[in-house]
Length: 606
Ligand code: M6R
Image (tube, rainbow, N blue to C red; front, side):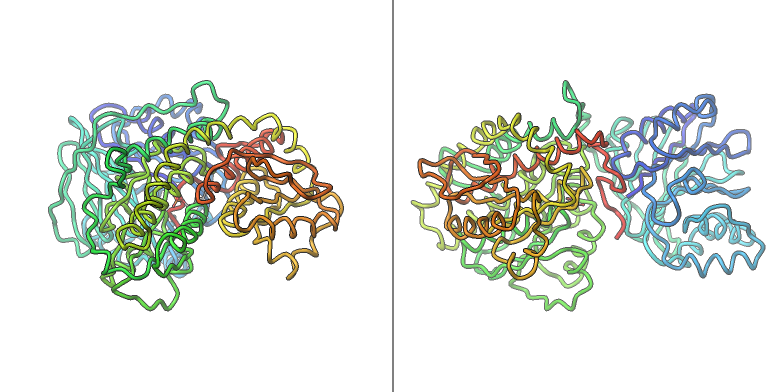
């Protein structure tokens, strides 16, 4: 989380810094700040809340410095207020930081003993004072090398110095950072997305490296302060135009974009003329893989859980699913015949990235399913399967979820077919059904009015539950995550069969419970579990698919019927009403739908 921008130019930089910070707001939005250097002094302005607040400040509007750094914050240490906002500055140095300094308490003690005075509650301020202290005896490069060696934890840093009118330092350990090159100016940014409006020439820093950015050139150093050469990458020069259009929120737009997400994914991967799935340059032979381990966080983890059912159904592979923050610290038995698949929309999630790095250090086979193809996870994995769903701005992931599960489904189908676990005839049939999916999702989007009315009951309740079995269980988890994330209502996703092992005790008169019971192999069992919660007073919203068979159950509060397709594909359809339920519930409460409280789009700290 948190976003960094730095610009070293011959022109005033504050307006460009503010523009870039707006693009970086998806990384954190509880406060923002800017520092520019002019006539030998550092001018710093910070404000609580969104970048808009910072922009309105008249001091920012009149800043004339031609070198500066900016930051959007997602608080780790200290309240989200303007004192704790970045940059943090001493007399000589100003710093923006993304990450966590784990030994900040110890360092602070040492620095206080040396006479340094602290203003904020942040871990970042120790970096400012440590550099200031080291500058007493060292030159700039040595003071940075020495400071970085004292820090434990993760960071991306942008640093300017009072008496250096042509210098920004950038440093990376564990948090992404990129350098951009422009005419007579150069840039530093948390990602290429923030830099793309200024340049398409980028260099990504690797862990342990730092850079010295001057107006006309950039130098790179390794952790020992030794100069290194880095490649300049040329990204596509088209800056993606992405706005809300006529929608009130990005999330609403992104939900409606899902048929095209699926269409694009199918177009990219399915060869309709030869009835095949194009996964070119897959670097391993199928007989080299006997296990697949799927790893992600949040919604991406739910995609992994979803994929488990398909891999088990369509292949004879062993399947493991893991939450990245757990996987990275467990005593894993790494096996050469395992394919490790990392799922991430942003491709920058710290835990997923760390899990990937761990697998790479063990020389495992690594593959990623990502949306942002320039991301750290995409760059560092051996093989990448992009989901092609375009920019996703809403913090609550919607179209990326359908994009991820589509690609994982295609991978399961392809591996099943190549391994001969899946017969040609069935493979063809499943591909044929898949082609219909975007239209079915489009029709499912029409369930709008009913969900708007239903959402009121959820808003009035103390809590809610989402139940499903088999293919529907990960979707129940995803539905509950969306509701809690957006409307701050307590919501639990549960396997329907587990209810009587404890959670049934939570059911009380009038509690809203979503039951996902499509007409698949689990249908009858789920309907029995539904009756058990109805008998205890729950208000059940049943989500099933259209069928000529009547639903044999009484006292269902509301029913939503999605379109019908083969059982593998029903999870795509079941997801849509749950996304809308969360959206309308938050809308009625007047919450900030695209930027829910306490969250950020890209979670770059662990
Ligand atoms: O960028 P990633 O897919 O790696 O992000 C993982 C989670 O942080 C993300 O899915 C999060 O759970 C969403 N806000 C859920 O809507």
